[in-house]
Image 1: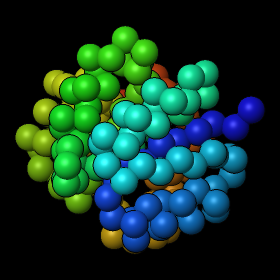
Image 2: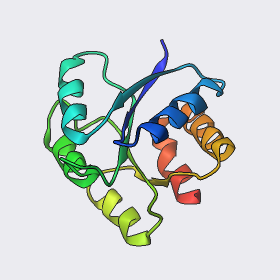
Image 3: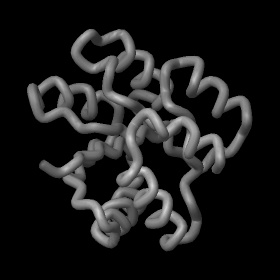
Image 4: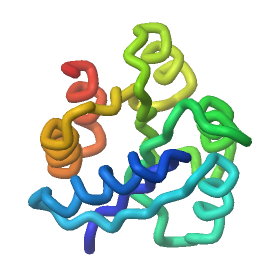
Length: 139
């Protein structure tokens, strides 16, 4: 059974790059995309037993910010145990701290280089969820 990742990001170009990067890694990943936080919540509630193993959640989106979506995910008894990695252009230390305080594994800054994105996704895909906090801190 393949791992599955959900990317919640309103930027379609970023979503397309993310999807393409996943195609080039050694682990098969089922990729799901939602354009905003509300769409992600609706999608997750409809998936029943096929929830993703990891959610990549953009910070800055219209309608519902990544912070608000994260807060809702962590309050929902059916969704709160899905690991979330905030995924943003931000590299501010305070955003990283807030992510962890709100229950995310951490914050991954969107790499500007496609190869770097692919390398990071490879490392995430082959790692156990429990190891991701350590990996993210290294970045």
